[in-house]
Image: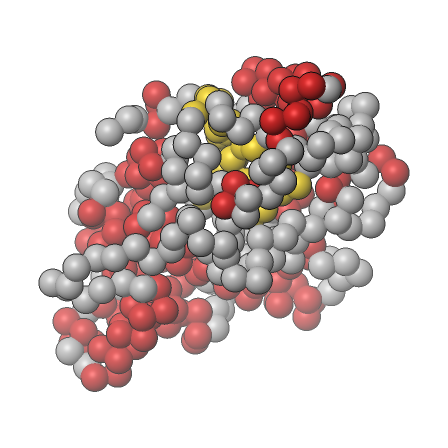
Amino acid sequence: MERRDKFVSFDIVEDASDNYFCRRNDDVDRYSSLSKDGVYKAIMKEWKILEQNLPDSIYVRVYESRFDLMRAVIVGAEGTPYHDGLFFFDIKFPFDYPNIPPRIHYHSLGFHINPNLYNNGAVCLSLLNTWHGSKSEKWDPTGSTILQLLLSIQGLVLNKRPFFNEPGLNLFSIPLQNKARAYNCEVFALMCRSSILLLRNPPKCFESFVEDHFRRRGLAVLLACNEYVNGRIAGYLNEKGSKVTKEFDRDIKLLYPLLLQELRDCNASLGIVAEQLQLESVNEEKKNSGIFKRAMATIKKVLGLKNKGEKKEKIVTWYTPLPT
């Protein structure tokens, strides 16, 4: 298995079959004509910029057979509720690029984790002209790039306080601050769910990356579960011991053993720390309770996971368009 330190930040691959825009046969009869005009040169320029300037938290794959498409993954930044999560985006260059911005689809796996990222894959951002903004924030054909787009998503969308991405909210309102804390908890729980799904069925050309990422960072995610349950919420780390809702507490304690098992399956470096956390809902007494068993059955059904001894099946297919 390819190690992440050998997984270069930018590379050309062959198989585009599970790219969102390829699966939709989106303008499939026209893309070959791109090489006949300036669009091809603009795309090649983008490739060069990405190859030379990507940070170590963003990885891109472009396709030899479909140079109008690409896929990027952004690693969630420390200090945000997205930390150590993986967020995949498929990108398509239009036929009059760069006069209009690229099209982009977020692989949400069915989860709405941010006001700017919808569970149908839509991305709401001024730079994409999918949200109003000043002229300087809009797509500029003479200067805007895919690198700028990816960095904007990483810095402006997947940030410490995503609740306030909703327009018109007062950052200093105490009631809204409380809602923002609760939102961070909700986002983190959804990130844990998506991590389980990605481990079970990673996107093409990123299989080794996904496995090795969680092999390296899995323990950090598990430890974060414990931090959240105890009220140490990403984005609000200066306010230790904040109360979390009973629903979130229950959710994390149910997700923890499922995530732990997936990490074991990919040979993550967990040591004995993960075993010693012993979150309340996974002790032997509660394991044997009827309420806990029913709750575990429900969460497994939602995630598409099988009980012990049953054959594992894929729970997300990258060949099927996500729900709209």
